[in-house]
Image (cartoon, rainbow, N blue to C red; front, side):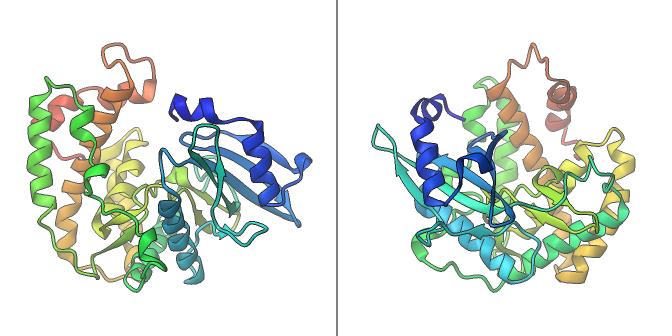
Length: 323
């Protein structure tokens, strides 16, 4: 989160958000948030999440587009954390700060269960359900039309979405060249409705909970965009194998049940499977660039980041497949 946003936030902002969503002071607690302030609260016997972000990062209409998409999926039976309205009937509540900006409050039903790594559900039967969920979302996306054109989310390759070259060091000409070549190909791919539409773009295991029956509830749609369904699939595969100590062995163990589940809900032409390695490479380069922006790569102390960056330049430079 930007320091500028932290500087603008105060207890008054929180109190106003609580008032608008009818939250009692003894029914709310702070959670860990990365780009927004997150709280869990209880109301009318249910558990909910309050998210307070800022207009410097996402405009009110972009957030309206996010929750419009979420609630469309929920209405279609997809396992997603539905957005709920404020006491005034609004899905997004704008609260002015002292510097002319706005904090934007939204609330969601809390997902049931817990992280699959913590509750023992990270196994084959879950991978089938994981694939089914993305397949259902992609099937529903083919009939989705945003409720208001002003709320429309960006495309995956909109200029403001492409930050890789800004994050890479100026001296990193090889990775920059690889990225440009990759993008030149991906931007020529067809965008027909049966392969392209609204996608989550970050549907990894850190963004869903699993209940005692193995049912998945996906949340954190903050990065949702119009993009290729193959990109969404690649992101799920990317993080599944990245978080495993033996990625090459685990990849087929994950992929086969995941794809089986996906095909139960959506029919995607097999030609798109040939694009998944390229979308994996896109995410690899993107994460490589993010780490260059956010860390001193010559003195990495975070073990996960250090492991990811070990030999990463050579793998990108030599076009080594991610898996």
